[in-house]
Image (cartoon, rainbow, N blue to C red; front, top):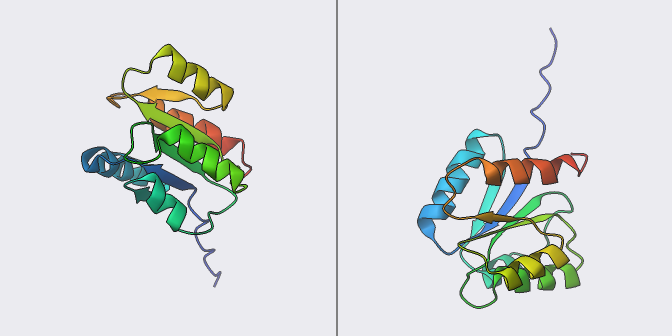
Amino acid sequence: MTALSPNPPRPAVFLVDDDPAVAHAVQFSFDLEGLNVSSFRDAESLLAAGDLPEKGCLVLDYHLPGLDGLELLDRLRANDVRMPAVLITTNPRPHLRARAAAAGVPIIEKPLLTDALLTAVRSALAHLDL
């Protein structure tokens, strides 16, 4: 009799969005795709969560209470969190696009009606050698 090998760990996604409907929808669809999503309502909640793993992907809403998504990313980078990130927002202005490009972060526009967010997250995770 052969022992079954345990399932490999599911890739981690850390979602920060203060809209419960968006967070629930993303978490549900990503779970169906085999991703392990941890959801946070604001930047401070993610920062208070403690050490993040080395491998995974951040999905950050730009418009958050307190720190915005790019300020959160700056804080995480200052704490040596190097996992890739995707920024989600509605109607990004040229200045925001420039800030995101300088940070090396793709922007996916809300409403999230296509699989663009999943594609961006999968692409980011593919570069991590999970």
